[in-house]
Length: 92
Image 1: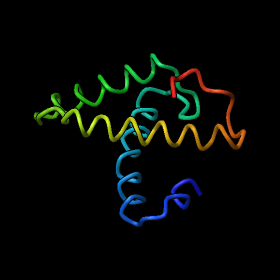
Image 2: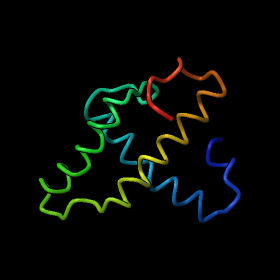
Image 3: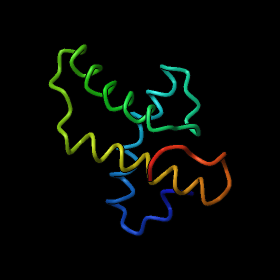
């Protein structure tokens, strides 16, 4: 439903790509994806870099990290407006 709010198919695809690592992070760390704080955001950003480096890859570019964080933020705003989760402590 959330992605359907995006008009452009390219935007939907970009958001779909960008949010996948968030769910992978939550699964690996045991974090409920509906719960997010500023601290979780910081840990997630660091995890993206550390995971890439541990795999022998270059760390994601700052722009890539920003896109992924933006997708997570947009998703949290969407579910927050629909009372799907408790209010987030993450900065909007």
